[in-house]
Image 1 (cartoon, rainbow, N blue to C red):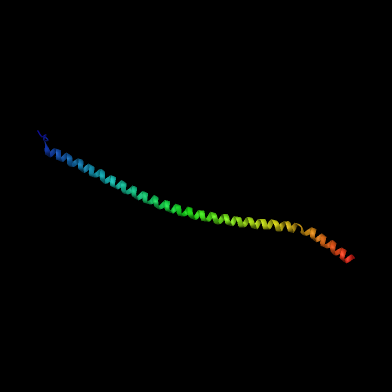
Image 2: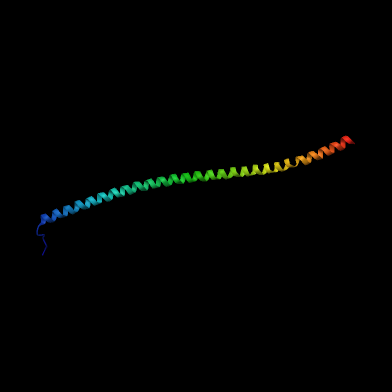
Length: 105
């Protein structure tokens, strides 16, 4: 014994409304998925750009480290030269004493 709906037209009308609602929900889900896809694409691009900036920053830091090493070497050289300059008065006194001894003698 098959069960037949009491009002097949009403049942079909109700099923049509349900399908229209399901279609609307699926449309919204599709829109949401499209937005998520766009957002993920933007995030991917941003990550790529961030990676490139980080690589440039790493290069700049390496160059800065090298430049600071050169500055340190120059400062060391300058300190050595300053130490020699501090000896100039003693050397001048010694030269004057030698000169006096040579010219006196």
